[in-house]
Image (cartoon, rainbow, N blue to C red; front, side, top):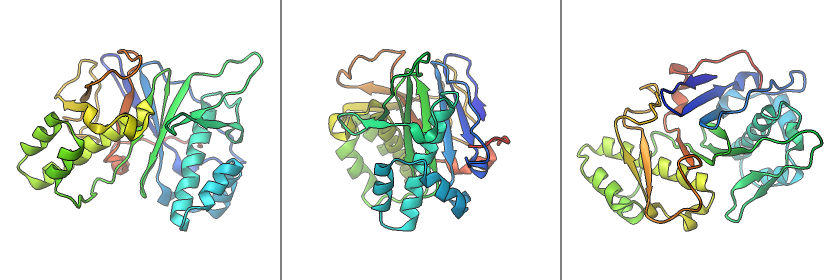
Length: 286
């Protein structure tokens, strides 16, 4: 697990153990819970999981509803992505219970806006941790963020994603005035496209963290502001995210009972598949 260390009050850890993914002969290895100011990111590259026998084992971890939903998807690629995403969530969460709850035993519910949450049972002599999670995936990457006592949202976008519409026209429909002005000031079309994707990804992640859906938290109701440094001193490798990756969400309306300790964490992973340049793998099984 790569730890992005802090000077202040926040840190992030990223893990990839896809090559040693969970199977019945290698039990899960428990991991320590994230601290209150820490986010753990687990990810998997679908193309690295090709073993049909393992995929069949993962299928057994899913609930009947999850399997039905997966098989309704058109195409093997979408079905595999769905299977891996659900398996990643179940095996990851199990680790944070010291494996007292098996991946297959987890039950989930959805909030009013459709965001999945853990539905804990009643346990004798054990209190489940206040885990929050969020998952996102593209064709090349599946990522799951985990926190304790703090909302988290993860969004993954292909860094070469093409924008069909005129970027500024599209931004005026969905972005705040400050964000539109930020994009308008960028003269290089490629850099403008990259900044647009960065903003869109962060705004998607923020809305996902709130768990309210796009209709309840429209993109125009808050602004992503970048600055070169951050008061909490989070250090991120420059080949992962540009030096201007740091953001401050500014809401134009009250968003529930939020303060500096429970403010939602948005995680942007637009360059995550460059993992081999900055991630260290350890001999552990997922």
